[in-house]
Image (cartoon, rainbow, N blue to C red):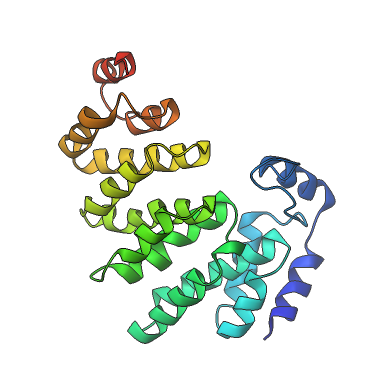
Length: 234
């Protein structure tokens, strides 16, 4: 199996109508966050099914897919990497994470980040130094910053909130709405497991938080508490 085989398979499944819809949904127009991305019109469940057929694709072939101009091919590459990381030994997990971090310029939309960062970066860094996440959080590349906060989802699921809260604090002043949503989402996940930890963070930062971030973070709180945070003035 080669990257070309997978590309041929995916392109045979493309649908022009779906391609137009996906291009609009993922904001590929001038000045939008997905500007210039190319879709061939293969829906996510179909991409996942094809990726499973190629789950043993060698790393060099996966990297070739990850560098494709076609969104669905990059998506398939990441699905394959997630599957491979789940059953890999320590050495192979490191190689997968290294490949991923060397190619973040191609992991350039929220769906690509969200399906891969926790399982690849977060899972690999569990029990290791989290310094790579802080480097990503300081990056000028929007998607690096989203990777940094989404990777902490793996730790949050394990009951470890330290890095999620630190990186959320680093990103409070970020200007990108997609980061506001991602940070608010991770804060909400912290609150679902430890409401006191969330409220301690909110007590320090709710007045400085972008409105979208705050709304996402408090979504699961009781209505009275939600309104109190929403009424808090800078």
